[in-house]
Length: 337
Image 1: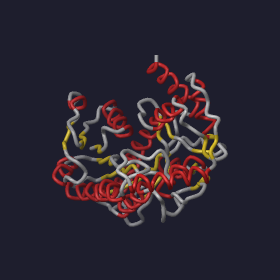
Image 2 (image 1 turned 120 degrees about the vertical axis):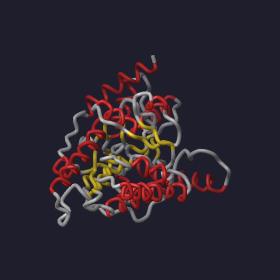
Image 3 (image 1 turned 90 degrees about the horizontal axis):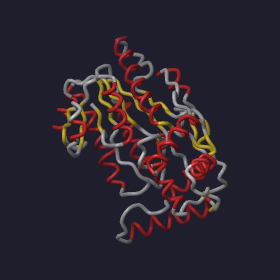
Image 4 (image 1 turned 90 degrees about the vertical axis):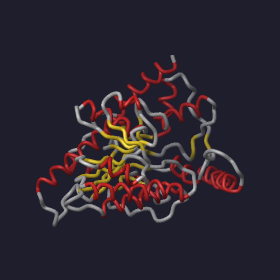
């Protein structure tokens, strides 16, 4: 069973499972006739629909909980409802239906610390304060997933960072659109290093995590709780890039002028605070053009140690940054031709 099948990661996960010839069931808030036509069982309902979740989890070997509310702006209660209460409901459905495994799609932002994150591993503490509801609610949800690990329900959390590749409709397309409209500026020095993760590698990690949980179950040893059950793992390409160099190389390859204008982190942060105040006080729609969280993310290093995933899951990024970038450029050129 897959939640979030209409999203980038969930959709590609369903595709891979179908390619492997596996029966797939998805939970969706709306009908998905294109998947139903391919033999996918679509159960309509949201993450707080206990009956739909129970039907979805009944008789399955693994639940991949990918769905969640993503964004840098919005009321805390909206994020909490989907990310925390929704995850609790998924856990309850797994327990009630007897599903033995849960692979949860988390986020590296659960260790956001308002500063650089350079080569940190899973020992990094959870976020304690953040001007954005997404990291705090994902951290709360991840805690509950890992605490729920038991010999009858093995759980693992994956933290893929900045997922990109063909089919992405968020990260890279947004960058390209802003650059075309000359609305993109480098925040800070422009030398910050960032990890990205190709979508194919992310799907590999999910399936490897499932296999590792299966092996753990076969051992029948719950007393020591060996990895990966009850643990979280950073998932990246393992090749941090100077993010603005990568962005500009991508833009030039698409015939778009590179981004040269800079704005200081202090200025971007202050502008983000102003935008947040205006979006709170006034009936303005959509996300503000800048937020305090986004300003920090754009200007600081955030790259991670994936040694634990390599060791415990057998994770090896198959698609390199060079190969994936070339593939992405070709896809974007075709889309714009």
